[in-house]
Length: 283
Image (tube, rainbow, N blue to C red; front, side, top):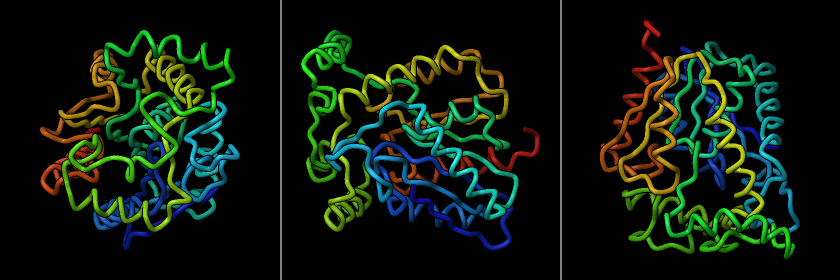
């Protein structure tokens, strides 16, 4: 496993940064700069199967994991590293997309943080209505024909960043950010991931359903998502907060999935909301 640590001068605390599927430490360089500039040391990880951590399949391009419970082993490794480095307290969680899924499970497993901020967390995966019948039978058909390690329909083993035009992307409205991420994909193509495998998709849906059915954590939680979100299921976010006394949900108008890598004004909105929440002594 590969872990990254960014130190802040005179830190007021630390953030455990849980990134999304296919992501890697370098992608969060600008984010880490903002977090350390606000006074937080940052510790993050390349999840198993992505970034510079070891792959779990012979085809390094596949976005795959045997079971979502395996990610909690990575969380445990990150916490061990945080303790070994005497990371300044209090600790907080910042989880994006799949990192929000992993992070919510970690909170339920007593992750030692004071507060949690979630950016477009994957507590449900958006599937177009006309494709939902196919999504229900796809895992069973794949097992029948030994296709669990194939990427889900509509994706390929190629990187999303090199396979998608800016005008059609679902991640950000900011062209500078898009170009920045494309430069990463071109500089280190061997570490990019393609689409998720059918097996990953099945396990992800099982885990998100289990999270929605579980009791909510009682520590303070702030969830932020964009109004132009089209990757995770926004209805799941709304439903999750209907009976969550310590949780609140806010929206950034016009933002897509990558709130921390959006156009400057929307990106600033996200960080303003996050820092105000983390520094509110009333919580």
